[in-house]
Image 1 (cartoon, rainbow, N blue to C red):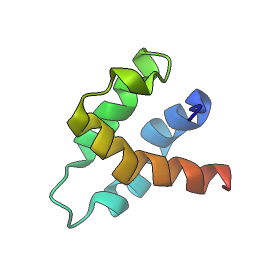
Image 2: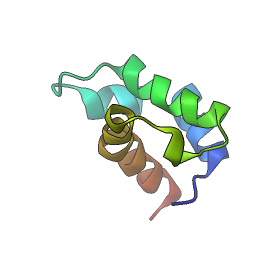
Image 3: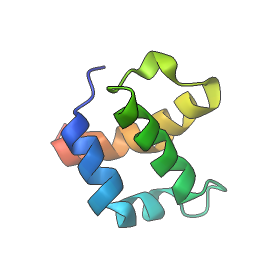
Image 4: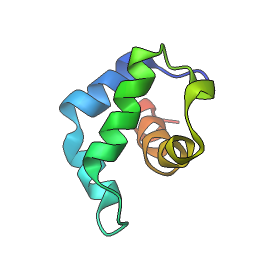
Length: 72
């Protein structure tokens, strides 16, 4: 999957309310999801660098939000 880094940056900078909503009641913290997003931004969106736990966080929260924002 090719990440839209501009969209990811917008999500973790301007749309933190969306992150808070999607993690609500899951036991995950919004800052955990934002941290994974920040890590991806710092590493040019290279998903291969994510740990197993980070990959789960990406798949559960960031990927659906990015798909929603991109209209896919």
